[in-house]
Every structure is written in structure tokens, then in C-alpha cells.
Image 1 (cartoon, rainbow, N blue to C red):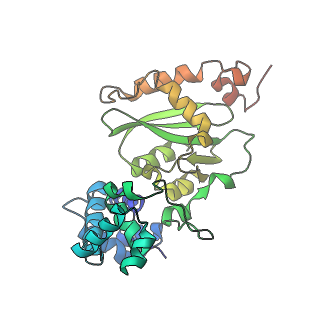
Image 2 (cartoon, rainbow, N blue to C red):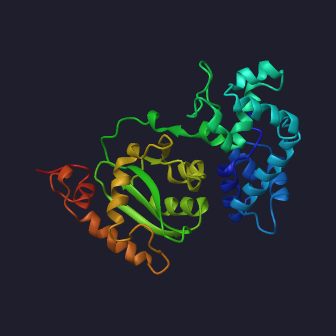
Image 3 (cartoon, rainbow, N blue to C red):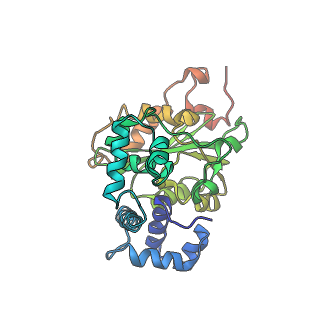
Length: 305
């Protein structure tokens, strides 16, 4: 049972509020109780409900609430004993049993909150999960279809989607690439999940769309609505695995030839974007036997020659 909202939840709430959804309708999309939505908006809004502000407020409130239960942080004697043990090159386990204080987990968490103490640990690498335990999925991870569930792709209409950001970090170009043909569609956009949903609904209204594979960005929080409105199936790549969406990553790199990384998107228009898209769709590709993505896409996926 997921008791706390995360950033993706809040991105979804903000997007649906802009679409004038009621609290009950939003709760139905997220699969939680309407009172949770009401409480979230009431406690984390100043005028307009904004994702970053709401998440910052909620995170700060949770940290403050935890402080009184952090035994070490509120006890200077314990802090001194732990530091004394570290100075003698003792492990957290030795400190616990020698002084009879707290627990190993509490000490490791305390060190995690105070990175300057990591130098005293013998192993300073990433902590591993205990054998036999499983990572707890958040609501969106549990509700996402993994790319590993996607069947082999041999036909047109299976798209990989992503966005590339401008230097100002607010404007973006939303890109979709057909995995078989490499055919690219793109559009300049301002906004988050609601804009991504609107563009997908518009883009695939008359274009074959059997599936879409995204990365794990919060801008794709309305993936269930995209599935419904585009009559498709949405999959998600593993976190930190851009190679699983290789066709899209490659096309985004080619698109950067026209819109370099770090450059501002303020002055570019959607006409500029479409001009670049047309150039790429009409560029011969070796993997397509030097046909263009447009020729393969419009020929039904058949690679001639």
C-alpha cells in the first residue's frame, strides 16, 4: 500500500487540475482516495498547485516530522560516542555493542544524512539490499508496463518517445521515432504531462500506433490516458537504460545537429522543428539499405533492394 505521493503523482495531479478534472476524477486516474487529492492540494498549494513547489513543501514537512524520531540527531551524547568510535576505526556494529546504543541501521542512516562521516566507513560504496528482499515499487512503477513485456517488434507503428530540452529547461521538443523505419515526428512544446498527452492524442489520431515506449520522466505521468486516447499500449524502459530506446536516442542525437545541446529554444518555431524533421526523414540510412525513413514508412515497412 502506497501511503505517500511522489513527484510523478504530483505531476499527474497538476496536469489534470489544469484540465479542470475534479478531485474524484483525479483520484480515479491515480487509484487513490479523493480525500488524498483534496488534502494534497490544500496543504501544498499557494494559489496555483505547482509540481516543484508542492513536492518541496511535502518533502520538507516529512523531514521535519521525522526529526523528533531521529534518536541520534537529537542526542549530542550519542553523536559524540559514535564519532569517538569512528576515530578508533570501529565499525557501526562494534560501536553499537560496545556502547549499547541505537542500532546499526540508525548509525548507517545517520551517516547517510551526514556525508562527511562516510570517510570513517571501511566500505564506502553503494549499500546493497539484503539478500532475499525486493525493492518496493512506487505507484507509477507498479502501474507501468515494463519494456521486458513488450513483444518483438517487426512491423510499423511501434514508437519510442522522449523529449529534448532547450537551454532554458522549460521548452522542449517532443520526439517519436518508429522503431522499424526510423521515421521521426516531433513538435515543440511548453509544459509537462498534460501537453505530452495532448500532443500524443493529436499526433496519433490518424497514424498507426501499436505501442509507445518511454523513459521514466515525470512528463509521461499521464501514460494511462495516452493509452486510452491513442488506443495503444505504453511501455517503459528500465531506469538509466537509454540503449533500450536506441532508435529514439539516435534520432534525438541527429536532431541536436539542428538544435545543439544547451541552446535556447525560445527563438525557434515549430516550423523550424518540422524543417529539421523533414531533413532527417529524407536522409538515406545504411540500415535501411540506403532508403530514407519516409520511403520505408510510406511503403508499409518493406525495405526495398
